[in-house]
Image (cartoon, rainbow, N blue to C red; front, side, top):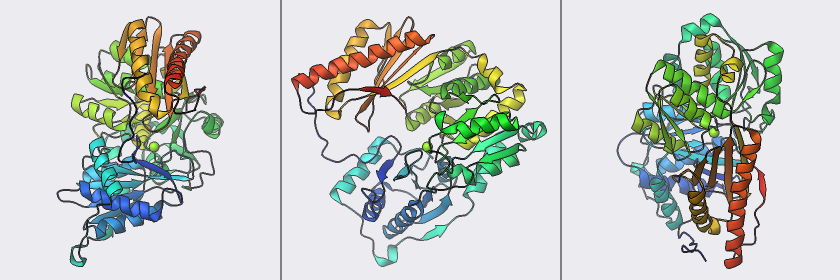
Amino acid sequence: VPERMPTQPSVPRLFGTDGVRRVVGEELTPWFVSEFACSLAHLLQGEGPVLVGWDFRTSSASIARLLSGSLSMCGLDAVEVGQLPTPCFQFNVKTLRARLGTMVTASHNPTPFNGIKVTGPEGLEIPREDEEVVERAMAEKTFPKVPWNRVGTVRADPGAIDRYLASIRANVDVAAIAHAAPRVVLDCGNGTSAVTSPRLLRELGTRLTTLNANADGYFPGHPSEPTDENLADLKATVVAVGAALGVAHDGDSDRVAFVDEKGRYVPGEETLALFAKWMLGKHPGATIATSITSSSVVSDVVRESGGKLSVSRSGSLPVARSAIETGAVFAGEENGGYYWPTHQVARDGPMSSAKMLELLVETGRPLSELLAELPKYHVIKRKIELPPVYKAPVMDAVRAELGREAEKTIAIDGVKAFFSDGWILVRPSGTEPICRIFAEAKDRSTAERLNRTGVTLVQDQLRALQAAIPTVGAGARAVPAS
Ligand code: MG
């Protein structure tokens, strides 16, 4: 029987790792949105407006207007910056010295979902303590009452995209890219990059072909997660037109995926390592920030390049905070989220596409060649069901077991265990009833063996606990992780 018995929180959790995500018309209703906006008023101090931005999902404009109206009736001035990518929104929150930002988006989630990302005044996601303030206000329905003569204003600001693209251009070598005029294929995936990236890449002087460059909340081109399988058209088009690079973004464009000139999908860990190596070449001895999920290819490259590596918990905010604290010149995770601190310390897909062009033009070599020089590892990712009530005791047991067996463990976010031939990361989800198990090694069979070890370890502990406290019937079954 576990020492820590599961407890139910008294206030329901609304925020996941990237804001609030709900199914429209089920949980995401007009009254939910309105109460959420009024609850945000509890967070707000100081001067400045609240920015409201939104993506192209079918309900996004409606949700944005509910947010603006509710915020103004709570006495705040709402500024609507329109339909744009999340990084463009975050850039504007910081630049316009807003006291808060609310961005309506469900990023890469399936079409029935929508969501709200909340950005603090420094342009980063709000911390967990602030989310708890909002959750408590929602649960207790403690909303401000503001008289008629204290109601705030609602106005539109059409300049957000111009300001953002100007900052990207100021932070890349536009003349060098324009001189080389590389051929590029951009797949907007019917998402928000449709309003920034065709224009950005043309202004940089590329010869551009676009795919799915019409924003559309039905995502008719392909699902909005830029995975290898979803980018078949992009890969084929890059080869067909003889492009140097293929670029794709997720629905709200905070992330990017690349395709090399041979039409190969580039895994995020390779892009991360390539960017890190390039930046350390320009800034010898500098710091690169990444998270616990990143591949050994990143630590190898940083070590070989004489740089320092800062490793944080996984997630957009922990990586951003670590990048700020360490003064990192570049940061990123294997999921395609990369940070360029001279522009802004937030995951930025369009900025990353401009930086990849600068890298290619500067090195003057094909992307496939540059990637071939990186150390090779095999990563295997799986997820298994892990009911929330068993998470804490299972992880206690897994930590203890891996602590005994491994050469070294890091337990800042789940547990990452290093062995002589590779590593295992066991990481329960904070928002879903699953546990992710990643393993990496120099060869595929070792990675497979390590991953199986992790899966078996979690399943054995879960079975033992279910026998001791059989409160939840769900079994554990391994499936490939997304
Ligand atoms: Mg996203």
